[in-house]
Length: 171
Image (cartoon, rainbow, N blue to C red; front, side, top):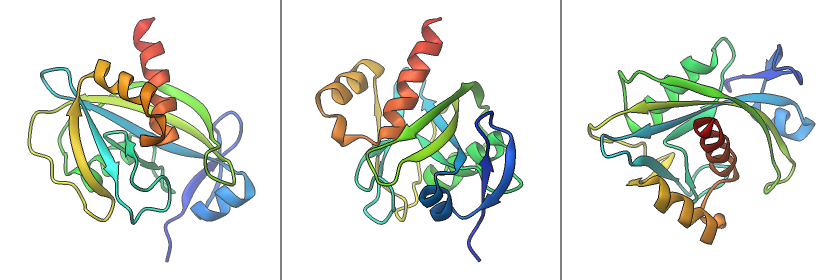
């Protein structure tokens, strides 16, 4: 049986749960947790989504991200995705904040509340090849330059989340 994801209203109040395809097809707002992991050099871990994933295959993305499943809160989903996608555990995640986004580069539009977290980690990365094809550590300035020059190399989700993150950190 397919996992159900959390459905929410325009104020991010839970209104139910259902399948991811139904949320997308029906324009139902749902929740995403996004994690930015930094090493002691201040570089951010980014992952390249595998060709097997349904959304933004072969594009660079957050350190880890994913839907909040039924019965989960944002933090639980962030911890789960971090372990599943890149094998990182036992990291303290700091909540940066939440923003709403509409992912329009894929049809139909995906409506999401995104909770962004950051953490520090210097250990090994063991990614799931079913979800991730590559990882790399990159400085924020190099990442911003790359996104500016080649936005299509990145998921729309990381571009929105990084803008939100940088605005939040600047205040």
